[in-house]
Length: 398
Image (cartoon, rainbow, N blue to C red):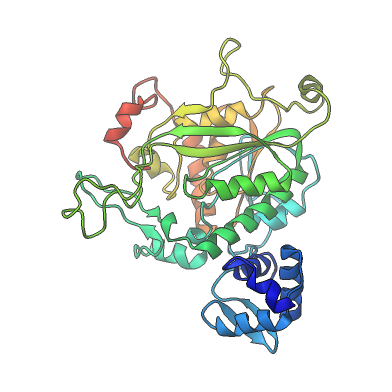
């Protein structure tokens, strides 16, 4: 009977269920545990022999046998292993004005915080996770690439490296979803009711990040569009651009999605504003609403010198974004992936208290110098800081 039931299953259904289960736990599971989890997902009976056979046939390609009858995914880091752990700092390791920076793994740090401690989260996380693993960071810092692509200097300008998200496979995307699901659950607890989360993403992976936040219990409130042209790989067929001169492999990216979510609250917005100071977005002025499109530009070389982080966003974009997250202008902004501290610098520039968490000692040391420098950065009213969208064609890389 089990054999007849399995014949009616969709191709790859058992495989996908096994991947999902093993990606969501650490670090391994028995054949019996895997079978029970797969059967529960499929809402039906499943023979243990079929699961065992699939695991054996795909070891060591897809799975690793850790002991007799026990397996784990081969080469796929667990949710907690994806980011290199750092010793949690009880006290901040750096303070500047109203900003505090902690050296810690953000999961451990969030678990140690009291509920309803922060009023907004603004962060630029590792888009695909793999690009910020220790191995890929070593390759990046050695100038050897890995998943980091070094764009060509086709117009005489040296470009910064970019991670290639087209290399992510199904397992990578599943690990990405699980990572942000656990992260969002931890964030939901520490945010006050009505607090917003805005998170940088990429058109190729933002659907996974958004699904994770929604599944964790956040309310989707739209998406902030950073209108900027970036240089993403695949514009022309590799090694065949002369043969197919009128073909683009994928659409040139002219925007960057920042999904926007809110922690649910009961009652009316005005009641939540009075109690928690959250629930809405701060307007640029009383007569102008905060819009979901922010015209931006790639980070200028002069700003990158102040904070040479590979995914640095310009202060001209971050400051109005951070300012909008506290509707009454009071509260604490949290960045669990602080990097070089650009979000903290933007919060300081607009007069907000902020807290950052970073687990990479190299980026942490960078932030010590970058936060004061970026905070003091003066943004003129010139075209350099208020670019038109057409200008982005002249600066095609972030």
